[in-house]
Image (cartoon, rainbow over all chains, first blue to last red; front, top):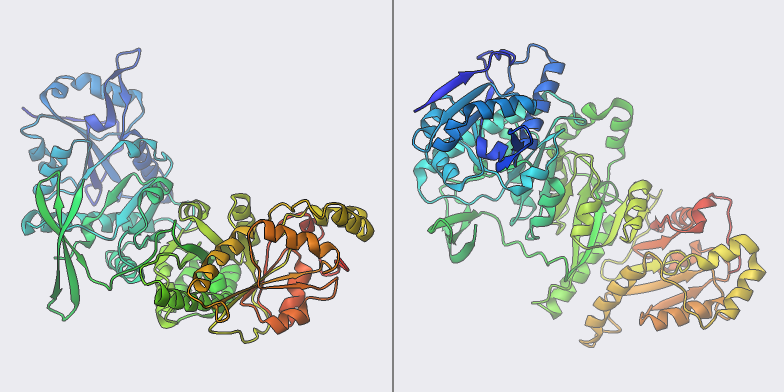
Length: 259
Length: 364
């Protein structure tokens, strides 16, 4: 059973080219936690949503008629959450998050919803859901506890230049295309702002290769219309400390897979 | 995700490129995946084993023209200019000979100890935005430098990365960044482009250090500045057997000493490609004794100690021709640069309050 709810008090976004981001309720809210009013408490993806909102605010400030904005959908992926629809919508409103649509789906049909809503980026904390998304060709990102401590004032995207390729060519190809088009959209958004004081920051990390592989990755990004702000060529040094310093909201690696 | 390396194959792609396919077993997903490594094997040492030297793009290369564009026309024009000139390599800057000399030492170390990671590891650090980084990569290629690790921060401070990579020395054109590094316990110095750069050896790395406030703390300089020369001598004599406290560059000298010992162990003391110098205004017979005793107590050998007793350092440095000379006083830095010596300023200690061309440190 699927039901969708159209929020009418959110600013009408033109159909032109918004970037549709679907995030699961598991990721947005801490499971099993409630505040004194019985509403959900902010979870792992909370800062990420705030950062997406910040980007939209700044985009509209630059150009009130901007149509390249993030369009955030909240999606439930299990029947239990499906029943909690009013608590979810109340919690969203209470926390001041701007969600344009709610998809109250369950385990069986959430994928259908993702596809029907033309989702460009699917964010979840559930590994199986991420795998399912990738297999259907939707760019799916698995969020972890690090996302919870990311900044709320700036969206930080990290591209990983050394990619691991899945041996099945099918889903990988679709995912790569999805990743490339999403990256191009991010690149375009980034381009709306100057070199400093941007609400989006794009970083590139190459872990194993030397300067040539980093140079190639920079050129690949450029060909997608993405101008990286930061680049770190690690040449074998462990990635952990760098990730801790960069604090990205999420990582993308599919753009560089060589098939 | 646990990935276990299981196999490796060399293949030639359609456009004749040689690539290495590395097969990894994903223990969680229970399947084999593969990864392309299209470029030559990168053999960089682990930070804990290597002597990491981080250099900024502005001291490794000459970027005056670009700096001017930035200052006069703003950042957008600067970025556009850089991209437009992307395929034009930069000319060598003040740190270039030093870096080349480090690589020469590495070549000798690799000959003697092929498996060892105790080498110099040169890291490029820049505040530039990454998309102009391609010009830097092109320049590194052009000059055939062995720099595989770099950090382009797009404006934010690289200090966190310097610490994570256990940087032993950081060279920059910006005194503020150098000061920040020193506060975090990283040996650092500011470099300037001299009018002329005298030729330096291509086979032997020569590093020269001032004593007070560079290798040693600034305690004695404080006495001198506050109470004058006589009091300074008195204090040094009284404290001859008390070790001086360490200064910001002591660790780097120590790192050089460790590498030197590797050459001595193979019978190459006379032919050692690393040579260190102490160039101090202290006097050999008096105040210099405390300096030597301190170095000995630290277990540090310095190849040549030059006690100038207040004489100008320029001519002596001109004879030594170091690849880099560290001093805490701008007066000496400028004097050295006038004679073509590549000097680096360590903005540490009491001298920073008095830094001007007209300050002298006679007869220590």
